[in-house]
Amino acid sequence: MTHRQVLEALSGLLLVLFVAMISGTIVSVALPQIIGALEGSQSQYTWVVTASLLASTASTPIWGKLADLFNKKLLLQISITIFMVSSLACGFAQNTGQLIAFRAIQGLGMGALQILVQVVIAAMISPKERGRYNGYLGAVMAVATVGGPLLGGLIADTSWLGWRWCFFIAVPFAVAALALLAKTLNLPTQRRANVSIDYWGATLIAVGVSVLLIWVTFVGNDFDWLSWQTAVMAGGGVLVLALATWIESKVKEPVVPLHVISRRTPALAILASLAVGMAMFGGAVFLGQYFQIGRGYGPTAAGLLTIPMMAGVLFSSTISGRMVSRTGQTKPFILVGLVILFLGFTGLATIDHKTALVLVSAYMLAVGIGVGMSMQNLVLVIQNTVPLREIGAASGAITFFRSLGGTVGVSVLGAVLANRVASNIAEGLAKAGIPTGGGAAGGSLNIAALPEPIKVIVRSAYGDATGHIFLISAGITVVGLIAAAFLKPAKLRDSLDLPEQAATPEPATTTA
Image (tube, rainbow, N blue to C red; front, side, top):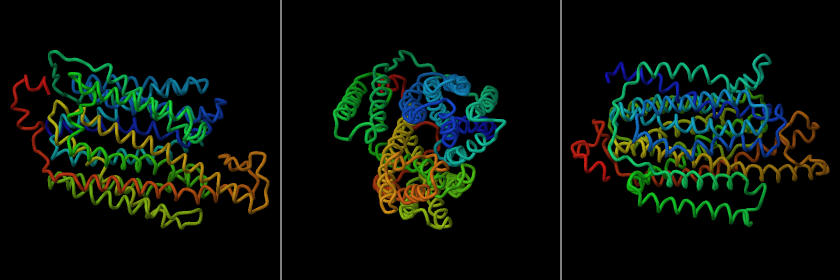
């Protein structure tokens, strides 16, 4: 493909990626209104979010492997269709049970689109040139991650639209992307003989990951960390994943190629991606909540206040992507990015309900810069070490672990935040001489309905508790920084495929 053809196809790919990512963030602000309109419970509120995350995270490596076996363009078109139909179904849902089911199907489409876009780009552009385009990719992710809640707030606050348009709005963009890619994307169809699909491995990975994520979602709230539920769910999830690992070591075409992720460079890049995943997801979720509950701003204003983080990702991903293409090096940019990310989280760990917004904005800017410099470059590190025929599985593996880190991070940090908020509210009520009965200390998110004295206590509790979760994030970032420090410095290759693999006869391809 010529440079012009690449840009034409890339426009459709970026549109697909934007729609997939924003569908996961656009409902975050509007979700209380959605659950209220459908008369759902708090447990169902959690599952509307968890269902899509479970399906997206668990299916990511499966889609990545399918991209190595079948026509990438056809898979992309199928996944767009799945996403589009499920988005319509979510908008027409009549109760929370239907919405949860449709969100799970939507999660399958979201997971497919996020990984297939990266796989298709890898099939079009060499690793060295890919750095420049990955900058655009990171910028789109940033806008979708931070801009989604802002757009969702605007839609929910507009009377003639309503919350259902948080789902409907993705459909016209998906249709446009489908038409654009049908015209501009031209990839050769590579059919391989004797293809086998690892159904057992795919099923066990999905089940094992789902059980662990369900456990993380509910532990500490519905049951204790040390309980029979924890033993059954955590132990069962680990056993299922252990069985899946054994199967992956035996089958001919594993969903997650152990020979790829067990190598030093991919393993270290995956570990670093776990930290970046927590930053990308946790920052958007909890900062928006901090501004709305801890500081008293509305949904639209809260979205505007998170712009520094979005701007940091936007500019750093674009600039670092071009510099990576120019120098052919990734490690220096990853290390600098993770150091800045650590400094940003360390700053956010000091915030409370009275911290100056200028300081909060500076810390968010640092977090955005750190994510932008490291996120896509870590994907590039792995893609540079594998042949073209394994690019889908390798990309799927790192995207899977990054999403897993983000999902687990949000669940764990959310549990820490909830416990800290409950303690702060109880202490505040006790100091004010207000009885804790009647649900006053329950941490209700309907702040406007609370009496003024309790409202002040609840806002202070959320504002002061938020800093503690970012202290945990800073510690996790250190782990990612150590992993990145041990990456071997490597020059990005100019060719689409590894030279030695490209010249290898077909028998070596089928046995790898």
